[in-house]
Length: 433
Ligand SMILES: Cc1cc2nc3c(=O)[nH]c(=O)nc-3n(C[C@H](O)[C@H](O)[C@H](O)COP(=O)(O)OP(=O)(O)OC[C@H]3O[C@@H](n4cnc5c(N)ncnc54)[C@H](O)[C@@H]3O)c2cc1C
Image (cartoon, rainbow, N blue to C red; front, side, top):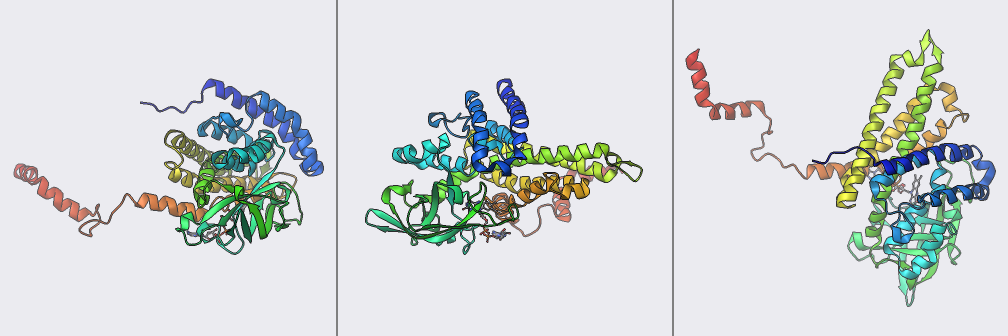
């Protein structure tokens, strides 16, 4: 019987190296991020990227033949737990969202020409990409309602529509756009994906939408969420990614593993907040004792430790199912950890912030920023409610109403059946009385 929670020693060494490297080389850059700007940050990251490549850890999410490491989801998950401790670390490891997911899409569905033109430069860090699916006027949680259209005109496609929350859209060189190419097809086959260079006439990057995470008006910064208008955008037939009508199939292939990586990165963030909470408890003295001695704080620490452990094991288990049985088989496990992990992330940061009082609320600590980041986790890659619904549906599929309409565990009915079954025994017992 195989039941093993250990990490093989060789990979553990890589994880130990990554933990040290991220903490010593990348964490210090975090506080200078805004000052450095994107270009400055890229310069600072160049030597670090070289080290990562030498170590064989660059673009680890991709198969070996495309310059990745072909690690499988469990190893990738463990790696993302380390990288998740810093919002910058994925950039140094060639697997920052959304480029990582987009490179997976190109690797999965791209033609040789598309890989040559877009994937290889993306992996080399020479191009940036964005994924443009969500629209302000239709529910992102039900993308079968998408309205952005793709109309065939001879050797070209013409795109029309409005998108928003196209992350990194304002700094991207190309966009992967989901559009309805056949409104009469079955809902799951209506949409296709297209590669659209941002400088194509008709593409208008309207703004970066200010959000809870970036509340100030800005344009063209890393991590911005662009609103984009596609107004009669003409692209060649070769811009179609995968087959016509394959948009949702490709999106699922990208999103399922991507969710596991999100969940592991959240654990990295939660761990950092947890460490801050525990450190604070050891020195803040109030009302006659340390915070560490107050039962409420002890409960928060114990609950956080237990919940993080649960989320970690659930995530690694989902990764294992994916490695052993494929992404489709892991859909329920992944949906479960997506909403559970997002809640754990939020709750741990919330408690850590509370333990720090006004310091936690201030920008002198990274907790308020983590808190704002955590709120989005319940929305992107599918809102919690949709994942809960799909888990519940899967669970309920194994149940049916009782044939006689009486609950299976109804005690009087069970007792009656047991009496009939053990009548002889009961008779014997009462005869001996
Ligand atoms: C930080 C961030 C980054 C993002 N990056 C990208 C990106 O790069 N590219 C991109 O295309 N999109 C991106 N998005 C958009 C994201 O994918 C959508 O916001 C998400 O899919 C939800 O769609 P919506 O906002 O239209 O909400 P809606 O679909 O309108 O849903 C609103 C709410 O309705 C409720 N609801 C919906 N369905 C159900 C249900 N079945 N049962 C019960 N309640 C339900 C939920 O509470 C849900 O939150 C990003 C979003 C965020 C916050």
